Image 1 (cartoon, rainbow, N blue to C red):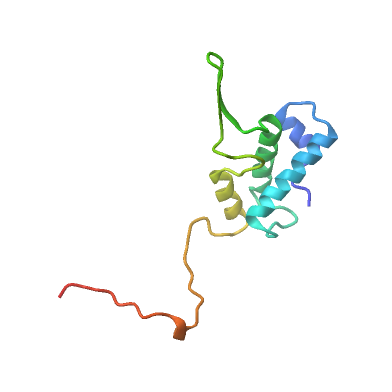
Image 2: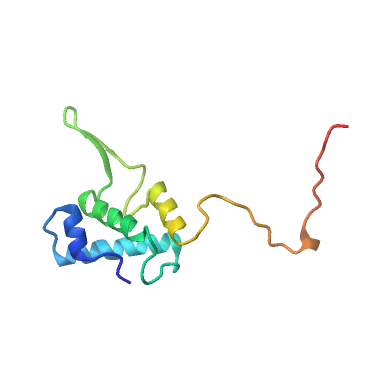
Length: 126
């Protein structure tokens, strides 16, 4: 499934990217997105997915090492917290999950049969 075209990626990054760079960025982006939302992507893509995909791909090409900050005097470099490879930000995760209809927040679901459930007693003062 095509998340974005090479022309769209070149336009966004304003860089003369080779076809191989665009293809690799697309594959890595597709892998990261599918790792988050599985096979819930549709054709055509749900609204919002393309935007997130292009932002991820642009980041892959412009900052592949995950550099967060840099200082010339004293040569201080700070990298994203142990993030190597393609890592989605919390905002990207939230937007993707919302786009494909997944819950964005944590929830709890008990699927055990009723006879397996322990009895819960709520204490209230008398």
